[in-house]
View 1: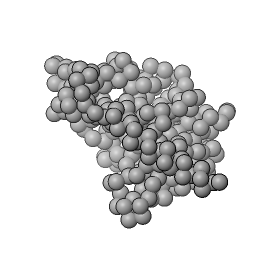
View 2: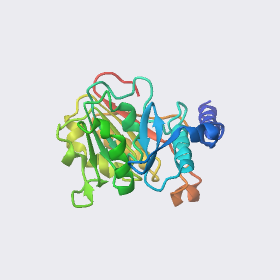
View 3: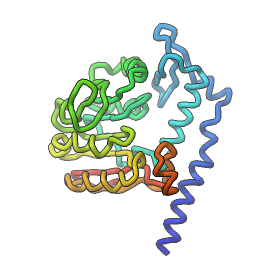
View 4: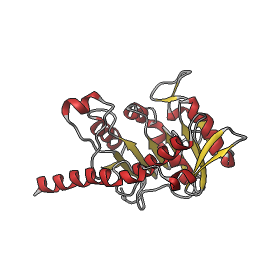
Length: 258
């Protein structure tokens, strides 16, 4: 019976990705959602009613395709969805969005957050992020460095830049550096009494197990999103024909909602 349930969950995740491909198709309606800011020299798309800017050189078609991918990634049935139901940013939370790219996650929660730290090392994205979050410049800090567990000109640790000493929500999508980045947040997470984490677990073989062990060792309850992902950019995925869980959700404090 357990094998049947696992097979159903696997097929459900794969079918979701196939059916939802239609959200990435570029048509007249998708192109009409993309605007151009002449003063900034950048295209933007509306995301949850707010302007989300894209780097210089992105065409209307590039932006429409990129937004379609984000919609697919954050669909309610996607294994890559960060937030779900009560597992969300709360009013007054200090938020860390690590590996922001276009910043869709931070943009969705910026109005309810007390402060948002955006970590993104790619300068082309940083310029666009500064424009996107211009209306909230008083409470958004953009950190243009690689995240990990060291501190130098190119790298930083969450423990080094979170001035409040504690956070309410951590979203992390840092291309395989998630485990080391959690170790670099050990002090902040220890001080955070009611904190939720959404950590990408598919970039490396064995990452889910390592991430869950780190978080559970800090007193978190952990679970994964449903369905599976195939990460084509990791050779181990091809060698092992491996499907991986998308996100580890974790919570410490009152309640258990992941």
